[in-house]
Image (cartoon, rainbow, N blue to C red; front, top):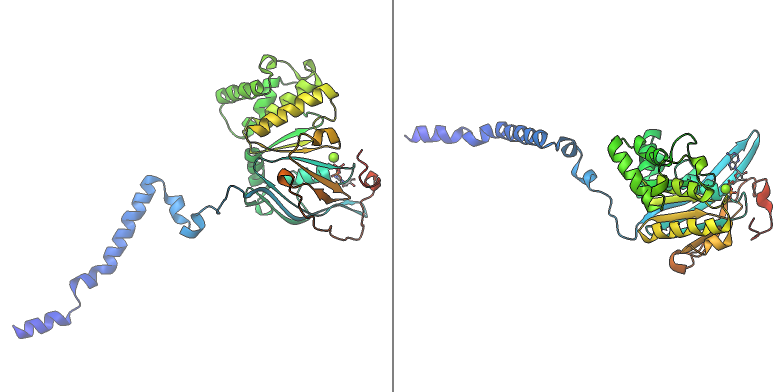
Length: 314
Ligand SMILES: Nc1ncnc2c1ncn2[C@@H]1O[C@H](COP(=O)(O)OP(=O)(O)O)[C@@H](O)[C@H]1O
Ligand SMILES: [Mg+2]
C-alpha cells in the first residue's frame, strides 16, 4: 500500500502531464471561433497596434511640419516652399493669401496630397502621408478631401449629374446609389433643376457650384479650393462664398486660396504667404500664431512674379 502510494506520488500528476495538450486545444478552439466571427484579421494584429491613435476633439485635421518643396527647372532650383508648418483643426474656415508665386497653390496641393513635399512631415487626420503608396494615397484623398479649382475642371461632354457622380465611381459606389447621392449633392448647391445640363449650358457660377457638389459628394471632412472665384464676377463670387460658408456651418473644414482680400473676410482664419513661407497667421478664432522663420536655402527667393513688393497682393 505504502509502496503503491510512493510510486503514485513520484509520477507527475496527470493534469500537469496533459496541460500543454489542453492549452493547444484551447488555442485551436479560439482560432476557430475567431475565423467564424470574422475577427481573424483583427486578432492577427498585436493588441497594442489595434488601438486607434488617441484623438481629441482638438486634434489637427491637417498637420504640416517644416514642409519644403523644391522644383527643378533644368539646372535652376526653385524653392516653392521653405519650411511651412501649419495646423488646421476640424471646423476651421481658412483663407490662404499672398502674392502670385508665394506658394499658396503648392501648399494646397501638398495638403490635398496631389503633390509630395521634398521635405518635412505631413499628417492628414493623424495618418503620415509620406508613408502611403500611390493607391493608398488615392483612397485617402477620395475619402477625406474635396477639391474645387478656379477653372471648374468639369468634363465637358458629361451632364452636371454625371460630373458629380465621378468621385463615387472611383469609390466603387453602385450606380443607383451614385445617382441618388449626386442628385442630393446638386440639391445642396441649389442646382437640382440643372442636373441634365451640360457644362456649356450653365453659367460660370453654376459650373462652379456643380464642381462644389462634386467635391462634397463623398462627404469629405476637408474641402480645398484654389482661387475658386478667380473666373467669376463679383455677384457670383458672393454666391459661391456664401455656399462655402454654409458648408463650413454644416461642419466642413474649408481652405480657400485667394489673393482677394474681400474673400478672406469670409474666413475665420487668414494665413499669409510670402516667398514660400508663412509670414502671418491670425490663428484659429483670431488667436495669433507665432510663425517660425523660413528655412534658409541657396536661392532665398523663387524666381518669377513672387518678388513683388511685400504685402502687394495681386
Ligand atoms: N510645376 C512647377 N514647376 C516649377 N516651378 C513651379 C511649379 N509649380 C510652382 N512652381 C513655382 O513655385 C513657386 C510657388 O508657386 P505657386 O505655389 O503656384 O504660387 P501661388 O499659388 O502662390 O501663385 C513659384 O515660383 C512657381 O513658379
Ligand atoms: Mg496659385
